[in-house]
Image 1 (cartoon, helix red, strand yellow):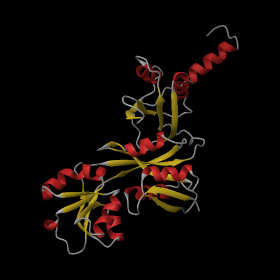
Image 2 (spheres, rainbow, N blue to C red; image 1 turned 90 degrees about the vertical axis):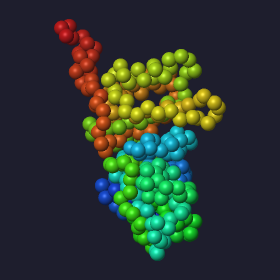
Image 3 (tube, rainbow, N blue to C red; image 1 turned 135 degrees about the horizontal axis):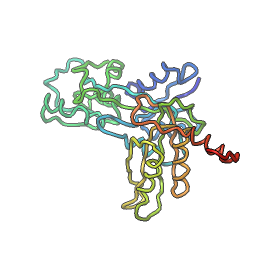
Image 4 (cartoon, helix red, strand yellow; image 1 turned 45 degrees about the vertical axis):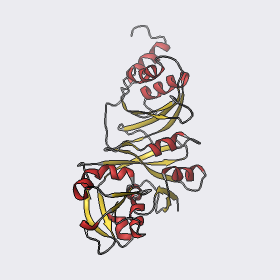
Length: 305
């Protein structure tokens, strides 16, 4: 039975995403779920060979990319994303039995979750003392421990801990979606589907004017659609950044492969994977089939082309 790590504790949206991977047939059979206290801890279990794979959140439609996940993927031995799922995210406000919603004075919340319910919290309670929790499920655990009157959590976590729901389906924005990825040790990428996503990190660019623009041009001149461009500090000094790029297409697509080869000639890049995209966005890369046939004919000495 494969052991799969996830950003825990039990009851997080990440565990729900792991359940989605299980039900979609990402594994050959049942798995042993291993809760990890952070995204980096889950990924380090993969690097150490203690688990087969890890599930971590990578992007929220409300708050953008999950920086802790991006940093963990960029630092340390390379890992590879092989699949993704998207979950519509709404929150449950949990409390100990007997708590009235009007009596809440302290609220436990994971910062990413709090950002998605801030307007609701302000409208419901006005000013409320905040307790920072390490995850959505941990917010429920903090409530049970008496560290806060209520918590922004999940229905699953509340039920498991014997808490009541003061409110359910809480979200400031309709159709708030979080994307979760399944990460393994480096391996052959899943076969292309025609609706794929490829992700890389530009770890080091030449320190000269226009180097970033030239990197982008490797994709643009080949008709490869970049769907995400993001910078994160390297934490090695002021003004030093690494860049995360997502594009439409697969490493087996000629245009994507050519762009990656061209980047490799002038920059240090980290391949994070090519995998089927849950929701297709952007324009697929152009096919080079006709051009490849034309070049083959030229090499054979065909006269009239």
